[in-house]
Length: 171
Image 1 (cartoon, one colour):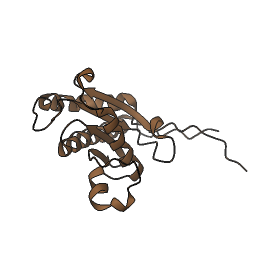
Image 2: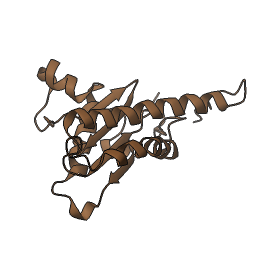
Image 3: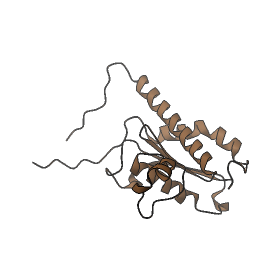
């Protein structure tokens, strides 16, 4: 008996609006540091947030991208920070590990065309890629967004009425 094809719907709690809210919580920190060239060398930052309910292999990468956000004037970019951030998010999404961890501890798992840049994180299944800052700060920004998103998802779960459970998939 064949299972009916179901379109993945993604995370119940982590929505695009919640990802936007998480980035909004981190925005004051990012904006305060954007002009410090020892932190954000380019003066620009790009973030990519993946849908944690769409793990690697369940959908193509582009379908799992939940939210993207640019800081700074994109017309003035000196490099494609969006492509870099997406490559970092792809590596962390596919591996379930931080990009730094992959580069330093698991180089044997790297595939041709994987990025060698760090700045993607995977925290409790939440993947965020950042590009534009120096690598340790890309990770800091990405990690901060991921932790904020996790907190917002927990808050959303707690806000539900007692006894309410997730919907059961329908055929």
